[in-house]
Image (cartoon, one colour):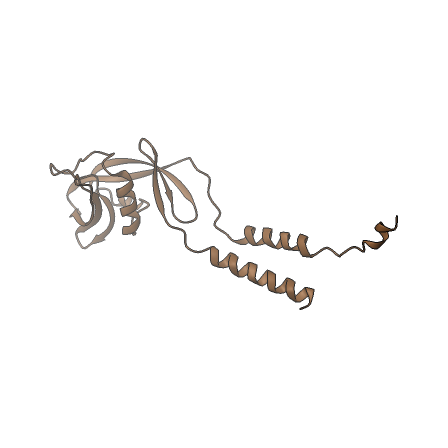
Length: 178
């Protein structure tokens, strides 16, 4: 096998492994302290201050639709699980945390909620005209963004490969005769 073919094969394998290792990252929500939570969506981290809002969907449509979990039940579950009972149990005497509203189904506001039993449940929370305690997130400064791009990693690997294999071999004979 010639040296150039070895180089090409090594570079191809390295690129393939780099692409394969750059798969989907799991989303996470972590309590930083107090009411502040860090949300990692797979490529960036955003910090949020979580509070509750007593309102109806009809009276605060824009606010509720601007939440990071709106349109994504899985993200609402992550937030509700991370918050747990830290926000208290403001919804009803049965011990329910704030509603993490994520969708609308006719006149029903679909939400995720943390229960006093330690469960996270999903379903219709209220109708659009009922006032309930909803979770609301306000973005705050915090962790820097993480670039999920493979370009810097591949560039670094290619640079290393060039340094390892790109130099011409020196003839060591003249040094030995000195």
